[in-house]
Image (spheres, rainbow, N blue to C red):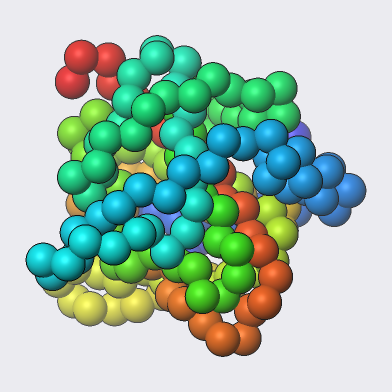
Length: 198
């Protein structure tokens, strides 16, 4: 599979965007299937001492049958669907990474988002490869260097694949900011290779 790649990070890791990873029809079909088949959850999280619902829906999928803990919340593992497995295998081919887990986020509209963070949990390993596939509405994805403050803004279109690798999770944080300009839903699939018994 030959795809056009665009590199965004100037140093301390890589963030490579493949605009045409999935064709339009496949991306639309995958969006509908994942939206309708997923057992969506909306866990509570604590922000600055206040307990609130996450501003998005999500599910965690893992072949090892293990949960996933982030922001102090333990998520139960769900199996991979046929569609999710097919997209994961395509990501594995591009990145040469054997993904065994996926966190799926469902942004119902522009009022759903996720604040600044990095995917640096111990179970992801010291230099994880994170494959992020976008379906549905285009949303802006921001990356900010922890030390220099340099910020990179990336438009993630439906069917695109963003691969963050190397030291990107150590030195950069990322977010999907809320916006009043987007009214349509977006699904984001983030594939990881979780380490057993970390």
